[in-house]
Image (cartoon, rainbow, N blue to C red; front, side, top):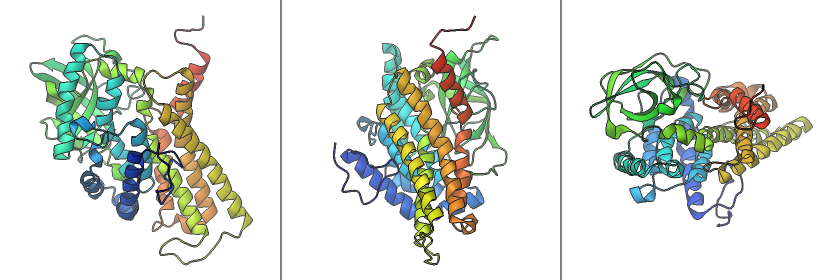
Length: 418
């Protein structure tokens, strides 16, 4: 592993023994974030519009293909590297980082994660052929993929089959259903839709989950609803409706039944929302330090660092931030298929700590910086609103993570109370 000193900043994930590739990608993400994303963030928030300009920058930098294997023309970043880069982007624009996650997962799940999922030889060959099509779209065409999960039911949490269904027909599938909170609605070229195979009976099964790429131009696909939320306004997560939408066989992002196995094999696949919020926590801390030192651009150079109450608050923020970083980095570095029980518990703990801790640090930041920090020309109030949304994110909301940790700690697989 290469040493850190050539970086001119401390990444959102902290000081680690980064590889040369990680150091290069973090530098790129930091520069884009500081020079491009941060200056635009207020406008996306104010107007609740998608950050198209940021995606042009991501496309131009090759970052849309971050997790596409090098053999397919991408950058070949692994799971941990993506998580580091995403946290750095989240430091400057939460909405960009959160939507970027949806796109990247479409390539990561079909790439490095799928490589760790058990498949038959026929499934592996089918998957290799079909993912080449999707990777080519991202690398050659700069295509953007979305990943709508939520339906307003227990399906997105993994506790029920998806209500959106796909019926097999000659040459493909016919999709019917509805997704809510569909980030990148109206901005994506393809929607990676999770749906349940309709086998013609009355017994839908989560094991029959399909993962299909629905082209944005598909007949029968409609976008509706208003988007005026508390935070993460630039994600533009409106509703998607599918009415007899035909999707060809080659649009399968995974073979039939493989997504369900992947969810069991790779629990870390659901941790990929967390980097955005680790970045937000860093942003709140960074602003507080700059503000108390009188170094916020455009603001009077008034120092407030001499007050003991401010010093203690900054110390508290730093302690919590360091704890979050430590759990986060341990979790991403050990992430892999079929983790041990301890590794899975650390994963849950890291997710909960980041999702709840980001807003707690933002809360401390606002209290410490005072009334001026509520003003919308400064980023802190937006960071506070954006960070509050993290614990609500399916499939692992803060409540669901606590439930999983308690249940899986006290019950071994197959155990029941008589």
